[in-house]
Image (cartoon, rainbow, N blue to C red; front, side):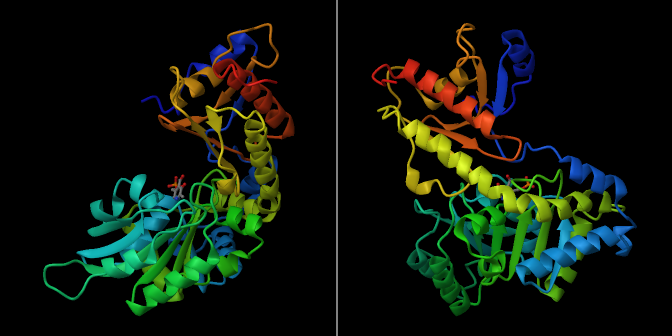
Length: 381
Ligand SMILES: Cc1ncc(COP(=O)(O)O)c(C=O)c1O
């Protein structure tokens, strides 16, 4: 199935059609701001493997303080941060870690837990709100039998598919985890989105967890990097793991500098991405289409998911492809290309980020109205 991710010809096509592109595929697409580039240019640097890079140290210190953890480590990616956490917490081969079946660590990290760490991921079905059933977790936990793996860790993702996990559930999870002596790791790739939208501090969101990864290169807009946070001894172990994974970098302050700007300047403006996501979602639902709809209950942050009722040849893929096209060069509304991802036959994802301003949101809404009206003739505008 055509996912819609890579389409190199689209820029030539847009030029040929004199169309603008609104790229809503992911918040990983952002380019560093002028302030980030300046900070990168001016960064004070040293060899970080010798722990002599002042900019990296500043970023780590700041991240640890913000999350209320003892220490932090700059890593190249969210995937690396999550993997190091799994290796650290599951310190015996043949361990088992529990996570939701929609979690990134299970779906999109190549089974790194098994591939690299020798850890089984045991998935639990994610509920619509991103949680999973704690009774199911409780009964999945292993007893001390020679036949079974050793239960070690629970992984939670917040936000998950743009949804904020209820903090009350995390507290209940903590009771189960502590009862069974399991560690807890938070994949907080978009932790700041969760904090800004819920009004709960990142420190509070992170508090129940033994370790947390957050990404600087998603909604926060830095070009590279994530930060893994935890106790002093956890981070000392993490530093060793990072080295063997090839993730120890040298004068890496040049990229950590952008991360510092991201924490200072981008966090306060995430609220704009959330407002814009909501505006697009509401505009779609106002059309009262029987084919295209959004469950507003799950629009919490910067992601929207459009449900497409497969009908009369319309599917998520045909919808996405039509949004990529300009069929009527005389229509200003059609001369807009929206890039997005058809995740399944019935689901299209759009993600807001700081390279998308209000004028682009207006353009996206005009194109969506145009295309939805065309594909669903019962829609009246
Ligand atoms: C929820 C979540 N966790 C982890 C990652 C992995 O981050 P990276 O792409 O930096 O490895 C991603 C990437 O999109 C993600 O969405």
